[in-house]
Length: 183
Image 1 (tube, rainbow, N blue to C red):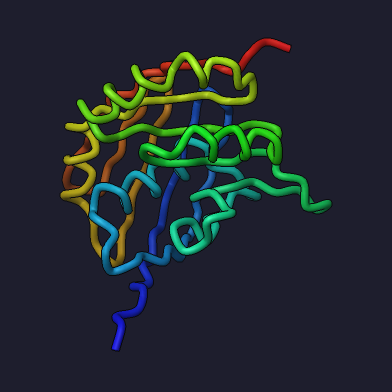
Image 2: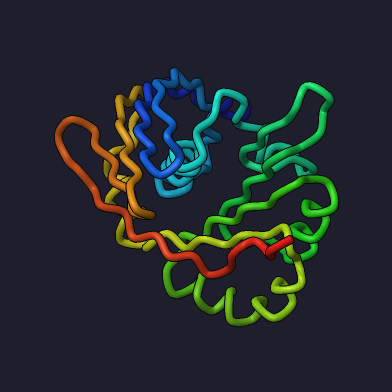
């Protein structure tokens, strides 16, 4: 018998001074048994950095045709498509045809750097794509916070971010590798 997904409850308080967004989100996050702590916490972080009342976790890994997170309008249009990890560049091109904006978070350290070097030339042609690298040490520190029930706060100011779980505060290393193309 296969082991089912674990349901994780996350209370996330977001203070994004850069976007003037301040809210508390009560999230229910489905976590597959094979999902490492690093990926789980990278998904929660991606939510925190893009928090919005309409942002939601998609079925992600369970559904090949959906992102990890997305913001969809009432008309079904996809405003924001968020991917994590080292996806096939074809997937990012396909996502850009379906969404107004595609955001990729890389978090695999040296492996992400190699992936980016191999794919940056081809990905530079995707105007709707933004790529942000999360420092691997930051992700490892976040992974240490992983639990089935979390209370986190995230502060974003001047392009920098911090996550706090009440015991530890982590400054996140974020580096933008590709900006959206100017329209």
